[in-house]
Image (cartoon, rainbow over all chains, first blue to last red; front, side, top):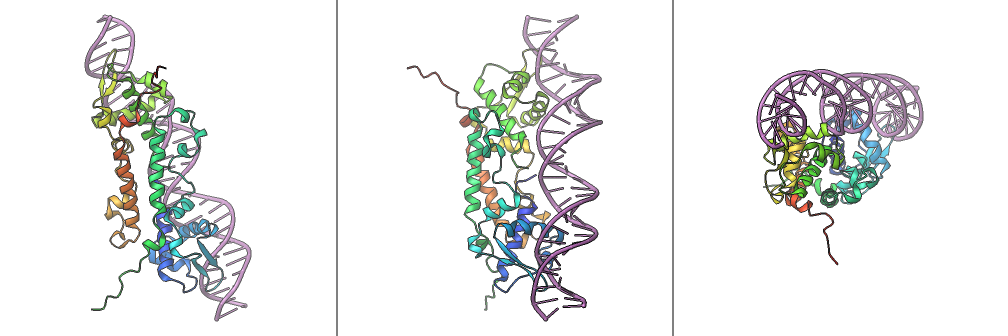
Length: 141
Length: 141
DNA sequence: CCCTAACTGGACCATTATAGGATTGATTAA
DNA sequence: TTAATCAATCCTATAATGGTCCAGTTAGGG
């Protein structure tokens, strides 16, 4: 339905959970899934492309789990969306002109490439670090 | 797959076809479908919400067909997309917070509402008239 | 009157994506 | 060695997408 599916939404929440826990060593999937209210078996599959993309690191075995492979500020939401949605553009016709016989002469193409650009620029401008600001800090009175 | 489906893409091409033919009276669906390479039976269904939204006008009977109900400059691409995709937002969770139990405290929500905003603003800024510039004008030498 | 074309509504279909479940195997800390 | 934990693969249910195919109705031009 939407080009931002649960994959991106769950994935971003997962990364924010990792970021908020900082460098305390790997955190296991089960605890994150529970905190975030995401089915663990589903989250387990989202984690694979994130690891392949070098966004997170995994440790197997007891006390294993996941941690960020980079600083949260160095992970753009754009990268997360691209990795998890498995495509780089909203519309195939903006990306692969060969898919549409009319693309050379299509008056609507600039509209969609323009949309593509504003979306791309926006998502590139936001990082996991921006979103993962510490929650409810202890403002002592 | 993408939030801009063939409905919006076909629909916009349909409206541009109407716009480019100007005020020459109604144009029948069949000829537009043929010119645009869109299945007529499919296009026939896209046309219904466009009429209901007051974007086009229909004339029945012989010499009947469709024409724009307003000036092309007064039809924003945003309206076309909203009418044809049948929803107003990319993500349900930005639109209907009650759908997500976490929305009150969801750190990712601002990312998606921000995305929503840039998409909305961009599509609102482009009109059918902007796109339907006359093709290959006769630049006399 | 007849032909054209829009309108209405629905049933149907094939393909793909989405969201999730389940099972088994490989690793490793303690 | 054993419990915890990632890793990989297969399975399923539901919905959306992009159509097709009627069958009948209404309205207007010639």
